[in-house]
Image (cartoon, one colour):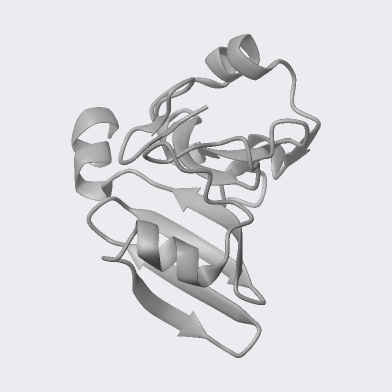
Length: 141
């Protein structure tokens, strides 16, 4: 699977329905905040075997609006970022900006491509892929 910045993954794009997610990945292993019952947050589908979490927007008929990735099989520009060291991440993606550094955890962002890299002990553990919010709302809102 490839990360397609601003659009999602090669296998599923932002704006996809939950039914489409089931076609692509099958039934989720876990569902958080089903039907947006807390009235605020997304419905989140976790696919442990794929190392992804899909976030469905309760305000727009539960279409896909965000993806969290922990799988080391996912690629970005032919690179597998999960599990690489901070120095490698910055060598591959020199335009990243450090936003959080508490000594254990770090967050690097690529604002142009709406990517967020979470590191623990200087190793990439998760990537969040988001659409450009203005474009997303124009297309789906």
